[in-house]
Structure formats: C-alpha cells, structure tokens
Length: 261
Ligand code: F6R
Image (cartoon, rainbow, N blue to C red; front, side, top):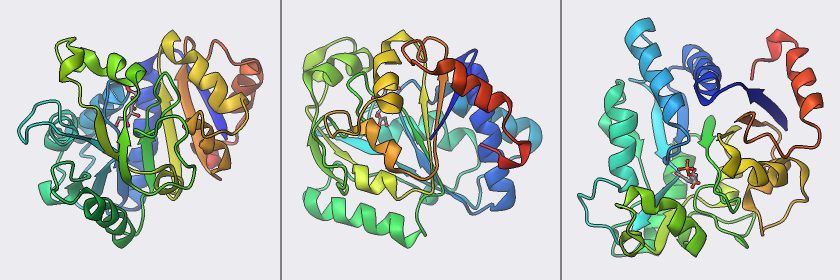
C-alpha cells in the first residue's frame, strides 16, 4: 500500500488525473472503475480539463460504476447512473454504450448482480478503480461485515451512510434508499490498481483504520491491505489520524519517478 498526502483535494485530483492520463495514453481502451459521491469530483474536473485542453480521449475506454441505489425512480437525478453521466461521462468523449452500472431497476436483482461481475470480467477486468470511503469504512456500498470475498450483490445501507448521503436528497432521510447494488469487496479487489481518495477530517478515522488498522470486515476498506497495488491519496485533514504520516510523506518524496503512482 502507498499513502500519498496532498495539500488539497484539487492537488489529489491532478495527481490521479495524471495517472489516468498515463494509463489511457499507454492503452486507450483501458477499463476504468468509476466512483460517485463528492470525493471523485476534483478528479473528474481534472479529467475534463485534460480532455478539453490536452485532447485526452476516453472514446475507446470503458467505465464501470461501483454501485447503484435500488428503489429510485428510473429518471431520478441522484441515481448513480445519472450522476456518472452528469459528472464525467457526458463531459468527456466516453461512448455512452461503454459506461456501465449495476442495474438497480432489474426485476431480478440476483441475476443483475451476476451479470455485472460477468460484464466486468468480459471487458478484461478493471485496470484502475477509483474509490471513495464512507465514514464507516465502506468501499462501494460494502457496509461493515461485508465479506471481503463478496461479489456484486444487494446490500442494506447503515443508518450512518443514509444520514451521510441525505445531503444529496434535500437533507430528507426518508428519500434516501435503504438498499443498493454494489460491486463486492472481492470484485473490487480484482481490479489491477485501486486508488482510494479521501478529503476532510470526517474521513480521518476511516483512513487511519484503512492504512494502519487490522484487516477486518467490520471496516471493509481495510481489504485494500490485501491488494498488491493500492494507493491512498488523501489531504492533510484526512491523514491527520495516521501515526506514521511523516514516513509516508518521506517515502513518496523519495520515490523513484519511474514507479509512477
Ligand atoms: C460511491 C461509493 C461510496 C462513496 C462513499 C463516500 O460510488 O461507492 O463508497 O465513495 O460513500 O462518499 P462521498 O465521496 O460522498 O464522501
């Protein structure tokens, strides 16, 4: 695991945007795992800038969203299908047919879950998976006690996560769905590079546990410790509970440039 502590979310967005640009330059048909929520927005802004100013193209790339609510109306603006379209897919030159998400509207959720993992496998797997982290340590919507080997499946959101996400639903908890379809922890661990972003003091405890705590399904983000190429990019506030922050900074500053992110 590598921990990169950046001065701001914008700096983090630029850093990871550079890694994605390098990936797409080497392989224009790369497969990206896309997160929603507020965390990836500075990264998406950076990718849009690279597309507009530098000609970075997503035309041959494929995107897979991490998760989707179950129970929202088809055209709801906060469905993750709508959010991915609005925040990144429509702002660059992704082919609409190349951006996928779990089908939270399926009448057969179990079949839709299996189909999603099959689609990721058929695309050759995810090259780089963007992740945020919940205040309770969820990745995707894998809440505490999610199996660390789990496939895509339906999950029940915790009260904490529903309260955290009420800001996207007019601060009205009753509008926040109770169920989601999410890539499993096992699905996420199959991506070739995991990049988890975190900004702000409310993520500090989750980042401490992810990096320095024991691996436990009570905090699904700790599964990143099992991955051979996991990068945590966080700002100073999110890094504020790390015991060894000074060492991570020194390590990153002295990293050979050829290693990339
Ligand atoms: C989003 C997702 C979630 C969020 C997490 C943090 O697709 O899978 O794990 O990354 O809930 O949300 P924000 O970024 O809004 O703090």
